[in-house]
Image 1 (cartoon, rainbow, N blue to C red):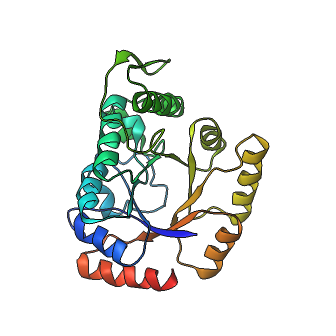
Image 2 (image 1 turned 90 degrees about the vertical axis):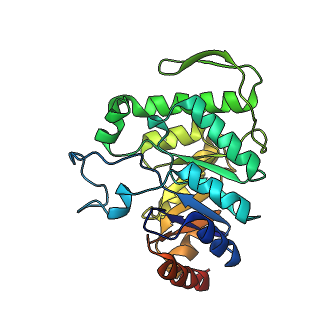
Length: 272
């Protein structure tokens, strides 16, 4: 099993390049960066973690800019979004960003996506929260078309475009893996039909991991990779995930300045 880090990189934390070097030096295989384009002043949608919304949500760097800064200072580190809020993004621009990052990194991109939770944030982008799941399903299909077809086209209820040229194409073939985030029935259906890997959150019971593995196998997809996003650094729980066939566990790295970050990474590295 591999070990990675999930975190928010902000203007107040360790910056992308030194973080990436520190991760690779300590043997972590991947970094998953969160995304929020903004936080609306109106706080109608409750924070899914409960309580006040943590400070880092307001200050997160654009994940693709941060990952692009990490690419040239590393050789092996996998560069991932955890998760990109694709429903708030233009699909053609995102296809270009992911493919460009995959090119400059030598094929090291993992593209994690999710439907998000902040309804005001979605609405500011013109996204209807009621149809965000159906939109994401079509966006995943459209992204894969752009990445794999010289003259890509897509026609759906929410996404539609006539044949287009778009280069570069990703280094990874047929395309960077799409990691579907979430544990709800709709998220699992999206994983089955559209995803290449599952990004499950760290509160998911290992028994549920085994159930989903069996369910995927029964539906013709026995080899889907699983990554745990933001797991607690608990040895017994990590061992349970390993037994359940998880490919990778990522630990949630607090959003800290450089010195505090490096000390925390040393703790995680010892557990790894």
